[in-house]
Amino acid sequence: MTLRLPNTFVLLLSLLALIALATWVVPGGRFATELVNGKTLIVAGSFQPAEARPQGLTAFLTSPIKGFVEAALIIGFVLIVGGAFSVLQKTEAIDAMIKAVARAHRRSAFVRAAIIPGFVTLFSLGGASFGMAEEAIPFVLIFIPLALALRLDSLTGVAIPFVGSQVGFATAFLNPFNVGVAQGIAGVPMFSGLGYRVFCWAIATALTVGFLMWWAARIRRDPTLSPSYELDQERRRTLDLASFENFAGMTGRQRMVLWLFALTLVGMIVGVVGWGWYVEEIAALFLVMAVTVGVVARLSAEDIVAAFLQGARDLVATALVIALAKATVILMRDGQIIDTMLHALAPLVGSENPVFAAQKMFVIQSVINFFIHSGTGQAALTMPIMAPLSDLVGITRQTAVLAFQFGELTTTIIPTSGITVGVLALSGLKYGTWVRWMLPLQAAYLVMALVLLAIPALTQWS
Image 1 (spheres, rainbow, N blue to C red):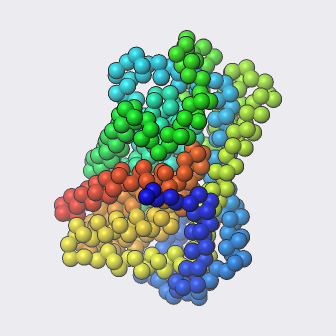
Image 2 (tube, rainbow, N blue to C red):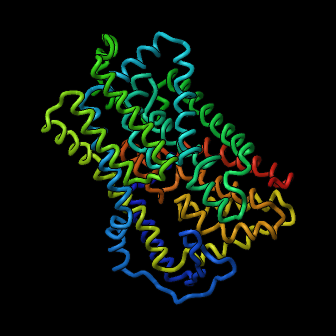
Image 3 (tube, rainbow, N blue to C red):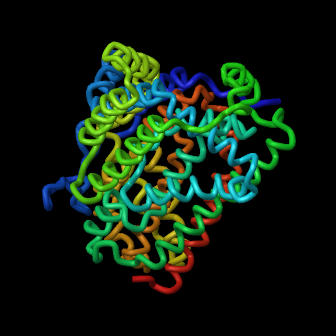
């Protein structure tokens, strides 16, 4: 019997209802906070019971619009970038690139062997260095048709940019949004422990590449084994396969458009790493790209605007899903149960064996990641508690930071993550289909994390 999970909207609304009910049962509580270097941090040991704030029917019904307001930046980012990519698609430069890669894939054994490892490593590096997360969402629009053209499936097309960037984020070594913040709060030198973190990143990336290579070989032998087979067949009917066979090469104008696109990506990396850009600046950059590539491709102003609006229109459902995901956090926060849940989880870390202590800290961070999936937010919330707690249970603060990072390995399957549900809504994949496909890789990540945490716990890595 096949496990069938509900539609993403039904799932999130059900989760909202359960959280609203939980606010009537779970006692309220709060930690004291202090402002350090412009960041609001929790004061360890300051938890106090607080007045319960049960969230009733009105709070439940208004939480989606509140989620829309609080997630306005990421929603606006998704709509603008989606519109920009629609203009990019209108130039047909992306289609030409896909056909060129598909042709090289047929003709070159090296390209066939390197395409998945190369792209996964590239996205993983993005997550590990400049914190690529939301930025991976629009790449789904490119890699699904590319995967189908290479006789793969939509699952592979989604996994290359999405899982690649997320596993890089969770095993990052230079990411200022999780490693930098967590180490600063824990009181260890910024970006210290680089060697072992790079080792962990390489292991996690290789594991992801290995799984996708195995899956690609399996699907090429028998495409019907893919859970997305029927969806892929529908999509292939809209692809002009004859044009792949008769493709003569890219035009000079198409090459220029692709260079502008590449320049945009380089600008995004430089902006994020060098100037601290976030979604507002990145969205503005893609807006400039949309206009520039439209002009270079000699599209009319009407065509540029129409393509942009169509791209944004296609992502309205994605915007609503992100709003619902944010609403789950709002209900927990307004009900004052987030700090209570964190306070209840923290004592569970204690153990006579430092290895078990580190591993339990990872498990707890994974649970917390279900509710608070912002790397910076989770670091600010948990590290003021986990860092001093690590001193008591016999592991180093550096290890505590690594356990916090590994907790984000579950981001690819949690329904409360706006990135995850946004990617799935954009791809057309059902949440249940995605989770069932990801379970073997997720189990491998779990084993990997437990093993990689044992080493620093035994060696007192500092």
